[in-house]
Length: 300
Ligand code: XIL
Image (cartoon, rainbow, N blue to C red; front, top):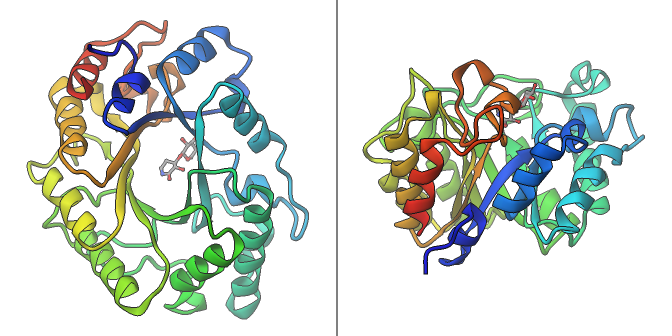
């Protein structure tokens, strides 16, 4: 029988369907009603990022991250951790560090945050957005600490919580022939060949006018899977919620056994970081859009 919610429909094939949740919206009953009904995986939109969790060096704050974690798990939903090491949304003290002191601060940050959530999360986005469009490494204060910073982050994460899946997460890695996609795939293959722990790749799947659903998306997912990692679509939104793109991205995940699930980057269009593009599955009043039906049908 066809399931009537996104989460239940995804669960029929052992997958999940998630959303980004913002702590500041948890007192909006229209928002929480939809979120609790439709989804079975949650990502904190901002509340588990470095600036939120370690506002002062060595002083951790899990208040709003825990608010989301508790809201989700009290409703039987699982939680993805997002994110531990990123060039963006660093606290001010971290932005001003470099070299060995930044390297140590990154290690301490991973250890501090992962200790708090040890054994509780489905996955962590250990490293976020570390590549340029041409497949080279993005220049950042983290990259300047040495090219091995990504593998140090993953080794630190594995030791901090051996039970959680460790993911690399990025955008514009959906097209199999694109330089950035190949750069990330080559990193995964290198890590696998050298025993650097990595379990999954998150494809953010932000589709805009400039980067829409590529015809080879399923091939991309399969290429990562063949390299030995699970994949997930972690931050989906599509300009004007194109039904064909939403259907196609959902079908691609369904067709790849190692595609664990799909997360859309918000509940209603009005909740989106790209709200002017109306890119989500519910309109600002909480009504299901045509794209909702195309996703639900593909999951069913
Ligand atoms: C975005 C949030 O949605 C915004 O609220 C915030 O102002 C900036 O970050 N890639 C990511 C996400 O990995 O963390 C970003 O989230 C969107 C792009």
